[in-house]
Length: 108
Image (tube, rainbow, N blue to C red; front, side, top):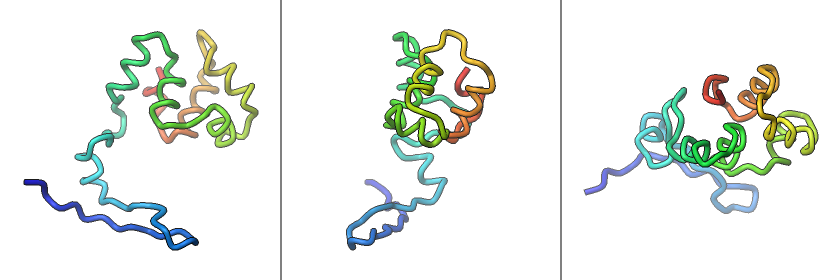
């Protein structure tokens, strides 16, 4: 039997559901949740298949290059250079990590 999850639905300006607030402990237990500092299997798998860590995380979080670039305050082209760099600078990786809400070590 599935246990009930205590969550709260927030409506948008149009009156339709826009967000769901879930207690953090329950979020971690849910499919797709992850413990801070960990790396989800999908991200590891994408890296094994040849994607950069930044691309693997961006796609896992369902963001486009343009969306992530906007979060970072740079152009999409500038972000694309970071994502395809063989050895991105630590400063660049830290900016990506901050924009994704990750720890730097999760991108290394």
